[in-house]
Image: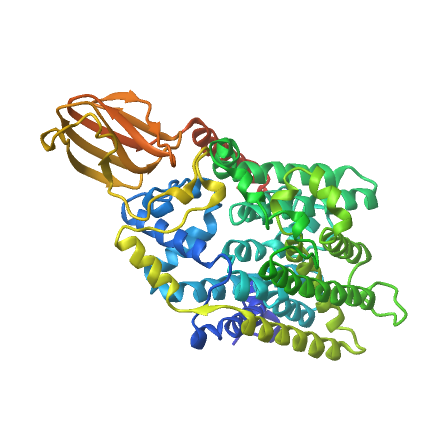
Length: 577
């Protein structure tokens, strides 16, 4: 029998797993409550529901064709396609397509929400456990998983990409604090240098950009503000230098998406992303425009923003170090950092910051100032967790906060749109060749996708003026028609123009009998039209890999190799032979 003093201690990994089990249980429970209305009401079909569901279906269809990373959205614009997958970050539509490949499609939305919000709770717990006692960290996980802005996205916006990006925010700011040496490391983790934290920050930062571009802009400015603030308070350039390194590495990791998206904007009508109704000036809190539905939604979002501001402000006052009660669980500089985040996010939702939205690079592409609630929600959850563990009135804060969150969820469920037929209708439209609507900002330059016909053949004769009789009509055979390759053979007695069910885009490479040709565009819309001579012709159209895609992929690969070598060199060497 082993003496008590000689019994082996639990394995570190086993102790860590046990420490995370309560957080996992709470996150699962809260996420289940969030998706519970889906069981009897159907799917919450908010503003962006059809856009995301269509992307999932199209991507899953291309996977079945053997295309691992789609670039061209085949069934957009009624089957004429668009380069949506070049410009829209891949994480959300790949996750949705993956879920749809193993689950019934009508179940994908709520499973997506359930998984993402469970991860959001764990992400918040990972931050709060380094700042708060266990009870406060668990409360923070619950508050962040069910924060009011997440509920707005789930029930009224259906922006699955932004929901996924927001789940990474607590991890991002945990790593920001770690890079700036604002956290005390546990005895089992004593890094020799900041390299691991910088590398992890770069990975999380890139994952946010690869989930949602507006969230990426918010993460960039939010983390830069914290790095700058901590550099000032510590009177050292170190936080800025380390932060800059992490940001550069993060952009490099996302280079395979960011570089093509940035370069190829000149090939699409990207300015439509800031058309009427999408301008920041029309979406500051409580703005009224000549669109009743837009104004109503803006006021709902604005009311939630005000609630978050007030709740976060009160929690910050109650949890501030050196308050009159003498209670504090947050270190002073951490408290100031969270307050800074809340202040920056709150200010940028108000109209007096309009000049910043005009002059700061890419900030206007966030479109909706109330999107800064994503950053405010991090401070909201952590500060409420800090107040929760105070000896005085901590329980009252917990009850009141959960009551407000529950009431918010109830109102949003009642205000939302619920349906069970959206995804079946999309699937039917793809199956019968009709496809779905395209996106204004991803429409190829010079095109008006509102003129695209509802249903068109894959290949057809465009110009028949020079063909007087039925014997002159060309014979057309479609040999291959996949999202990224079209092969058509034609036999004609006279020259004519072949119209393809495809929008003309510079990445398409067209060959006629092995010779490269430049296709024409139609008059009403930019349909790809290939001029052909008399006789037999074999038309091959392939979606080429442009130089920006090669360079972007190479950049990501170089950064991955650099991080692996950088991290390997930082590993402690054993003195044992």
